[in-house]
Length: 483
Ligand code: SF4
Ligand code: FE
Image (cartoon, rainbow, N blue to C red; front, side, top):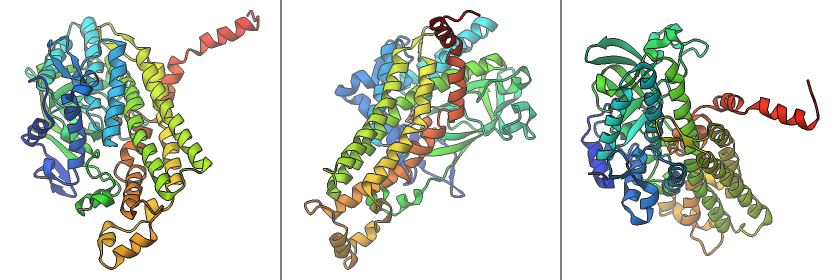
């Protein structure tokens, strides 16, 4: 079975025995929980679109390792064309869900671990690459969703992993056995962990030799003994319990994050991809971060498309669409959004092969991409709020709108242009609210800031990759300076 249907995916997740906690209780059936379900639906879209002939070229690829057509989210990039298609696929999914569809972290981890294990084996004679290829083809054959877990909780930021007061604040190996290792720690902000079959763990930063036990990478099924998740709260999350799809804004799709705890989890030898080779921790991090910074030039652009569309609809319904400043604001939003897309496409087109043969993006351009993502969505949201007007945060609830006595009053006073129903006007306001300040704001705003690394992380990479010396030479030459 190379490709699962959306329904098969849902049922495959239902069969897993994941340990999920929320609001102080264990969630017995995460698949059916109204707060969690929209996030599962977003991942489902990666399966549904792959079944549609019109998206086959974007959503799938032929794996050179299995010879089968596989979902692109499990693919190892073979060319710059693959890298470009990845970004286009992410934009498409952002457009269809207006949320984080989560499956990219696994794809980005796949490609980072593929090349890093190859180079580690070359230096140390280890068999991590073979381990990884076996795992990767298993995921391709079964069309699995894989979470990519990098961010540790990190404790005191001024201290190295081994120097922390509590040694578990970075995930580490606590026991080495003949048949494998035992790991302990916690990964933060895990988007999609609860919707994944497997999890690839990677180190969170470069490491020195003293941090040997922390330089570890591996994959295990999400329902492995010792793994549990504590779901993060989102603004307006309990609105999903109120049975009002109107008030939620985007009732079908969403994203959810979890603090994912590894409480002495056993990892068998053939699932280990790094174990103490500290100098490769930084390489893995840099590559994963690079791929994920490219990703944001696709997914956030797709969500931006929906937000721009929503703002334009709001302008129509408000009767303001012809005002020149509204038109100009929509142009500005489009300009910012397409600039992000340019960055996503550019770092892909300028990609190159690694020693292992897979393709990697241009790291400087991928970091510029993500640096822009830390800013532009905020401006796009600001303009959407400007266009929508205050109603997006002051509208009465659906319950009031459906009320026999209050409903007609709301209908009368909150109508915009007469040909548009008040209900439709309220619905578009709620969708904007959802992306600007509701559950989807996690994905479109704060994740744009901190996801795939906070802004300063990109600035460090830009400084490293910017080749300032070359630029100085150019200037000196033209100024006829000899030193
Ligand atoms: Fe994919 Fe974007 Fe979500 Fe990352 S933030 S997993 S790139 S949708
Ligand atoms: Fe992300």
